[in-house]
Length: 126
Image (cartoon, rainbow, N blue to C red; front, side, top):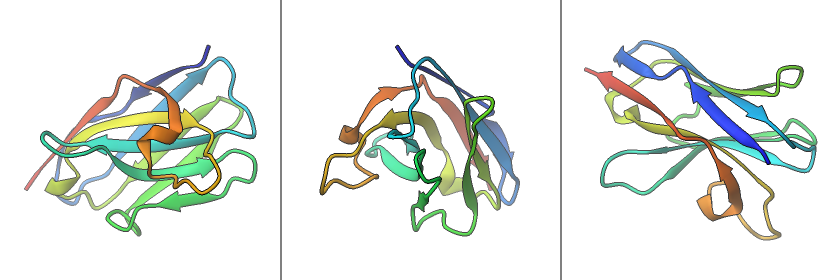
């Protein structure tokens, strides 16, 4: 059984950078997609970035494009999210997730992911 453990969250000022990590233990396969989601209080869970392990292809949400970068350290089975130029609206609980997309589905659909980490809080002040 796969377990995902996030780390690296914390408090930051607007314009700062943070780097999140997600350590995966157990079965992670080339047919999997791993992603970062975030959820702020009172809002729906939002897909931030995803990577398809088979090709290394990445997807990024428009709201963070040019500021956030998703990465994968295969040797360490670790997913990363480099967050630069942080904004107060980036404040949220950030989750790591693993899944396999069904045909016709979108990487930003939380329903397509069957394994989730416990989350790490990111708070950005202005």
